[in-house]
Image 1 (tube, rainbow, N blue to C red):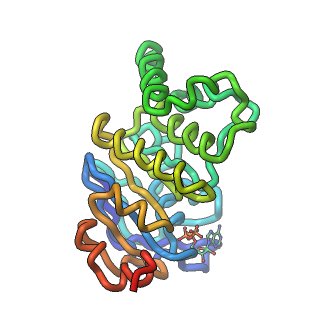
Image 2: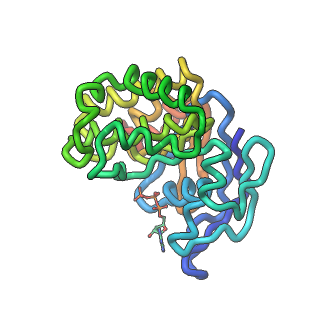
Length: 242
Ligand code: ATP
């Protein structure tokens, strides 16, 4: 479904951050992209979703392909219309809008009002916590609730692929489990495909089918989740087991 082949990204014309990044996300799967701080995970997501331009970054080499078509050079709006939606690190909800207004904002590219209504119900079904908060301003919600709004808003665009950037960041372990459980359910029941960037390898691998480990701008290790969990380097550096 999504394929990156030898992608190179440069910031400010000189800072080479992705140095031949290749990965694939098959339809209907959850793929985890792991790696230490600064490895280039967020940059990879921005390269896919067309958000590099606003940061003075540029894909200078390689191919990014979605459903057989090149995404290189397309603007962010066009990429959303193709069915890719990025949930940014740090959540980025509209603080002054209510939960429901935030969710509806995710459907701005759609014209089918009945479908939008049905999807709103679907989001409330998967995130029951948001039902009683629907008229609350999003800025007053807890971090975990805001993360739910951010994912819910992405779903309202009926995306084929969701790019999730560190959904566990700053959340209590129980909430992390709750959110990852919902992501897994959405994958299994709605069929949404996810590319999941995480520093928390343990929870990410628990729900993913396949994983990539990134270091210094490229992939250094990849495999089906079961195999990665047995890998000594992954155990030592990412799971804290020795
Ligand atoms: P983190 O988990 O900390 O977000 P990451 O793996 O997502 O790490 P990136 O955010 O992609 O890493 O950053 C990779 C490298 O690119 C870092 O060295 C960072 O300093 C650099 N970088 C990121 N954004 C920019 C920018 N707008 N201009 C210049 N350099 C940048």
